[in-house]
Structure formats: structure tokens, C-alpha cells
Image 1: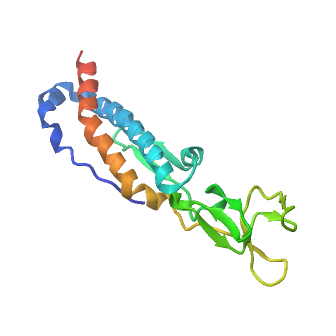
Image 2 (image 1 turned 180 degrees about the vertical axis):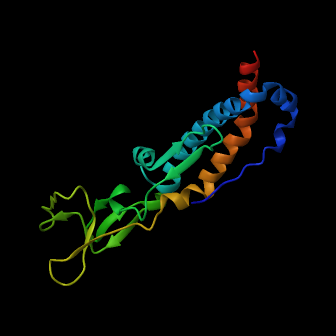
Image 3 (image 1 turned 120 degrees about the horizontal axis):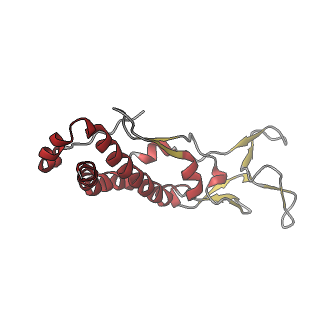
Amino acid sequence: MLDMKYDLSGLKHISNALHAAGDKMPLVLNRAINHTGDKALTQMRSVLVGQTGLKRRTLVRAVKSTKAFGAGAYVIRSKGGNIRVKFFAARETRKGVSAAPWNSRRIYPGTFMKGGRFPNRVALKLGGAVLKRVGKSRHPLETIRSGLFIPEEMVKGQSEAAFFAVIDRDLPGRIAHELYRVLN
């Protein structure tokens, strides 16, 4: 698991209000962190669509969050190992299956999604799986994977930049908002 740390030194201008909040401070921080974390999560998912080539609904299922409670932290988790090629708008051509991991279309030679002879190919009932023969006979078959890992993509490039941009822009103001809300 990768931990991202954030420097809160830019929040010194509201230190007096923080002291006035006293025992309500954990509530204030949790509300602000959860609100800003949800915004950062939404922004990361949007950026990951373009960065990975996956559909948004796939990323919503794969990238989840756990809210901060008590002394906890807002955590963004993801699952997704080596993603199968079928999730990248795969379509069969004569040369093989064409798919677009990292939003860059390429052909996987010798792969297939349908059965029969060209041009009258019939879709197989395998949920859109992209397959390749392992040997010279009909079986065994191998499912083709893309080499893209969502957890790795989350912490680099545009998605990392989007996360920190939202935190830098929104967290100080949100802490002040929640603080004044508690202090009336």
C-alpha cells in the first residue's frame, strides 16, 4: 500500500479558531477531510478515464474510499491487477483484436473474440473475453491481459496531480468553513 502525505503548514492563519474549537476539533477535521477527499476521489476517477482508457463505471467499481472517523484517515483504495484487454473497447479484426489500454489503440496479433470463418464470425458466449491459443491445437486457450494496473496508475501522472490540486485548493477553505460552522 502506498501512503501519500500532505503538508498542512499552510493552515496557520486559522490557528486561533482551531484552539477555540477545543474538543470539537476532530469533528471539524473529519468533516473537512471527508468532503475534500470525496471531491479529490471524483476528480481522480475522471482523470483516470483518460489516463487508462477504462470506462468510468469500471473505475467507479475499482477505486473506492474509506471516510475518516475519529483519528482515522481518508483512504482511497483501488483493486485491479493486470486488467483484461476486453475492458479497453476491444474489437476483432482479421489481424487480431484491437484494444486501447492507456488510450492508445494497438493490435494483439493472433487473438480472437469470435468463432467461425471470416466474414461470417459469430460472437462466443464468453462475455467479450479476448483469447489466444497456447499451442497449435484448439485448446488450451489463454486470456489476454493488458499490463495496466489501476493502483499504479492512481499514484502517477495526471491522477496524482489532480488529487493534490484538489487538496491544495479546497482543504484549507473547507476546514475554515467547518470550523466556523461549529463555532457559530
